[in-house]
Image 1 (tube, rainbow, N blue to C red):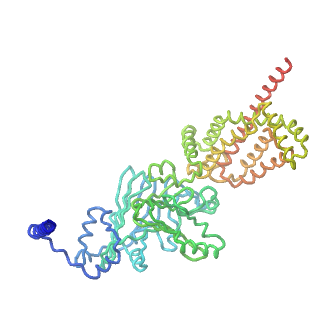
Image 2: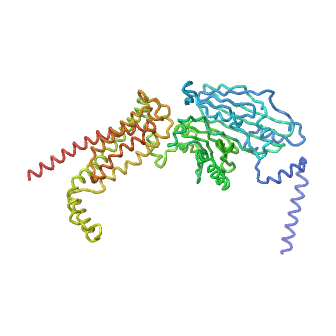
Image 3: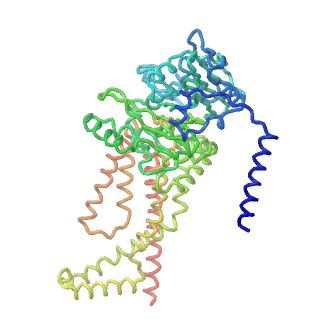
Length: 574
């Protein structure tokens, strides 16, 4: 029986083979040169890029076999030229020399580079790029001579300029090919009204498809000395990746301080541990507090690197990305990043209570729509917060007032138990009598703290909002305050803030002993010194908060006096 089954299997197999040979004649495969076989064997895991690119490019790639005349077709330009892309949001200048980005000026955001010229359109490309001859969208591979060749060649461009105003869409295509099998295509698709654009970069080296790295840098924009001081909110320029990982943000300032030897040691330690390279990335961004250049990549295929190059006394930093599909170059506006998607809004560092900051930002935008002034919007939202938390504040102040009234009785109890610090029994009896007093008088010892603790996340969320939201950048208030993101040039608001904080403290009831109370009076002085360098928008919030606190405390004190009179009147009747 087993022999018959085995014989049936063999015969079935022979029938299938005979059927394939007779009825399906295979087409002869083109002979592959041994050199190319060696290259393919060296890269067994490399995936063909044809799956990621349009059919037209795929057709070209298939036809470019060794020996084909198309593979040796030379494509280049005879002269260097700049290609201007003009939209309602930005004006970009691309060069056909290397097919790189030379300038990306934002029309709705300005920068003051010097006092003579005043405000100019902010350029997202650093001026240092032309000094070191490394521009954004340069190509990097493991072959430096190949890189130098394709980054200095003159590409053939599909357009000499593109005017996309009025909601139009346009494509800019750069092409270069030599007679050695090198071919490069950069296809960029722009749309008016958007800071992002589609990117498709195809590179063939000696007829073989490769996936090079695309460079952004050096750095981001051209920060002034005043901009470099504003590191409290965003922490300076650097690279960020998503999904967030450990050490997913690397900052320039950490590896570029006055101690150059220490910087070098820290950087070498980072590179030796391979902590400047990341895999499984959805996007990578070069960013500062207000702006970003973000590269969207295929999650499972791309890798990202943060690079430090140049002389030790003045290094520069680069972002290296493989397989970029879409690029966003523009401001970190909340609504714009939400519309872009891909969790890009995480670039705005609202902090631990980010969801509160987002709610407050939407509320402040609503008020801005009413008054058309971000300074008055800060005042209105501060008033709005005070009104919401008034019941909690009143409860807290009322409890603190009662605690203040009980202080003489509490001191009398402590005086009876003089050995409570060393005698555990006396300390227990003293605590029992104090708690009994609280219960008799209807006072909750934690009643003054808990309502204030509930408000802390809101205050912290508003603090972070004012530090990182681009809406307040270069936004004027009134009189001498022309920029809510910059410090008060005459220090008027910080001084007023200190004075109002002192008045507020004097009006607020306290349970502290006289020594602690005197120490607390130093806080307004410390806050004034601290807030001198803070953005005027943040100081305006604190000043408004102090003024409202004074008014609120006045109302609470009046209400407490009425309660006391009623209580005393009832006692007299009895």
